[in-house]
Each structure stands twice: as C-alpha cells, then as structure tokens.
Length: 128
View 1 (spheres, rainbow, N blue to C red):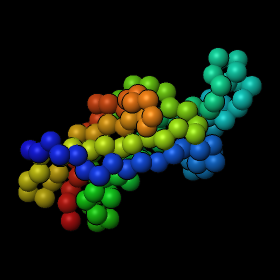
View 2: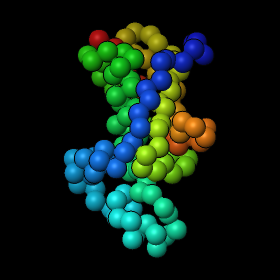
View 3: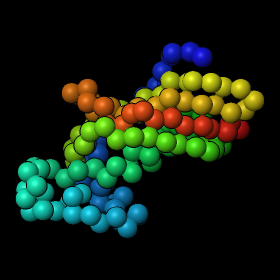
View 4: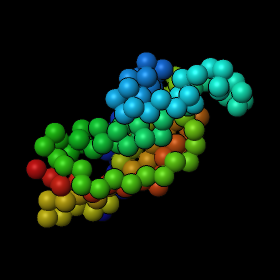
C-alpha cells in the first residue's frame, strides 16, 4: 500500500482532560492527578492514562474514514510516559485496503521532542 500518512490528529492533553477521562472510565489512580504522590516517585507532572491513547487513535480513525466507519480491532504498545500539558500527534499510514476493510499502521508521538509514546500500533476498520 502507500506510505503516505493521513493528516495527523494533534491534541494537547491538559489536567482537566485527564480528570474527565478518569471520571468516564472510573480510573482514579493517583499517578494521574496527585502531586504529593507524584513527587514521592520523582515525577513533576501527572502521567496521562495510557488507555486514553486508544481513545485518541479511535477518534483519529473515525476522522480519517468517516463517522460511519467501525473500528473492529485496535492494538497498541506503550513506549514512553506522556505528561499533563504535553501535545500528542496520532499518525496513521494505510497498510492494506480491500473489500470494505482498511488496515492501518499507527503511532502516537509527543510533539516537540519526537518521543514516541505508542508504537507499534495497528487497527482494522470496516468501511461504510
């Protein structure tokens, strides 16, 4: 297939976004909001919940393929921590498309320092 990337999805993840996600998923681990807990572990900012990257990748896929597209499989591996206030870029490259199914290679990068937050990652999407 092509090595041309889709238009990246870029988002800055702020603490209020993280609290909203924690409330929606009932994941209140102190690593994501508690300054004293973080300081005791040598961290100066809250760590973004790793599962949020799956949500951002799904948002990116729906943006690339349309709101009627259905993500039927999504897998990803964490590479680096991402902290509150950092901006991420979700990147996708089509790997295969046929018979109404698209397979996409994905990654999530931290804007500014080039750190890879999530890779390898991939998705299968049923097209409308």
